[in-house]
Length: 286
Image 1 (cartoon, rainbow, N blue to C red):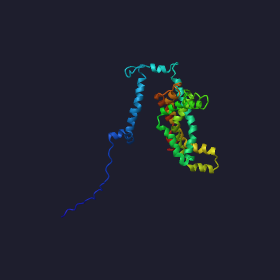
Image 2 (image 1 turned 90 degrees about the vertical axis):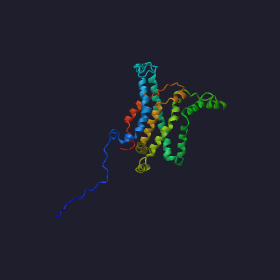
Image 3 (image 1 turned 45 degrees about the vertical axis):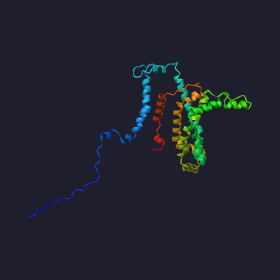
Image 4 (image 1 turned 60 degrees about the horizontal axis):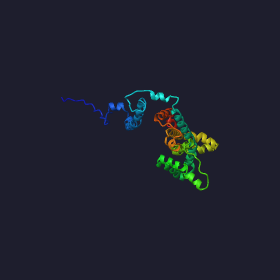
């Protein structure tokens, strides 16, 4: 008698490979962390390491390089000395930075508005005119101002040649330092503000006008809130650069005003601002 074998149908074979188990390296670092690792290393070597070195030297003996070999709090005690002028220098830097931000916001806004709404096909040429000075060293441009305003310089000599008494003595004074900062940092305020105004849809402006809003109401309720991300980025960038400005005070001010340029103060202030500023919400991402 023949034996009959009962066979079951074979189970379908899946062609998909089984998911790989996460390795120890994957568990420690996510994909984003692994991709950003070169940038993190670069920032650590170029930014964090110098700050750590400065912090270590702050505990060394004054006017020595005995880092990690001596420990003293004399340097910190000197900061709070009533005869120390470091706080006066810090106030000068803050004043120049705030004044530069406020004045450049007023100066750059009409230009940024013109680049977006008025100049049309000439906007590229106007942008080049503002970008072109950045190809020249800042010190060279500032010394050009010195040669123009110095006694017997371009302005003074030209006025004397025309029979006048001469040009005004404006060099080596705080207003001249502020003027130099406005000149140097104008592009850093202008272009973020231009991008901010470019984010304002034209249809919203037309709709507000059709609903009866006047020009002031359109600017206050539509243009300004939507352009605020670019304006804030430009002001923050200008403020950080302005509070660390050194060349303007040395070249145009003749060191009549001593400003603060220590990155520890600037970095702490910048981090405090960034902790309060939600760029994702300002840029409309959430």
